[in-house]
Length: 259
Image (cartoon, rainbow, N blue to C red):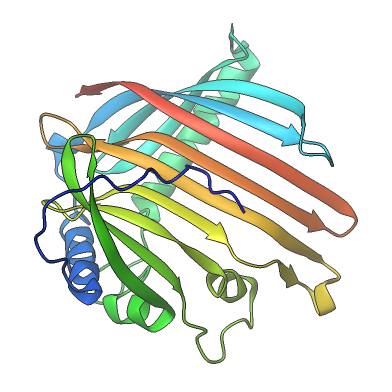
């Protein structure tokens, strides 16, 4: 199975001993906790070009559409607004719909926040212990990413007991990938994730199945210290009842500016 981004060959970095995987996971989690409450200095805007493609049974592009978004990041939360479709400006009806959608999203963020939190106010996505319970991590080498030393770490599922009772657990039980971690900041500079085996859902898989899932992104650190995502790539093939969905989406961002 090919990955969303092809892994580059590992150029030789220094001969310094690689850290333990548990140490690196700890640094990543701690970095995430520190960024739960971004400051106003991290507010910025940028443009995003999204290419959406639907594929036929032979993997060829059957339909495609290019959309442009203007994204405003406020205290770490991206708010996207569609501004162009296939080279044309939006109609007034489409603009009104985008305004309603954006206002609804802003209200949702104000009411509940974009992250679930536990009683201590910390992110509840995955704790350090939960990550290490679910996945086996290995630090395999160093590489230079955008001129910065990075640690390459792979992960794969351990096969958690009693997992697989719902769709989320089934998918997590098949997800593996590679992380490129900036050695200085403990930020994820690159990521590749893919699904190992097909996952079915519903009674005996009648409702559907997920045959392919791939996700990747690339990030850089700006001169003023903000980490930004330059490229996202997403691909999936699934069946829902008797309909097959095969799509991929690639997003490129540019024109970053501080507010």
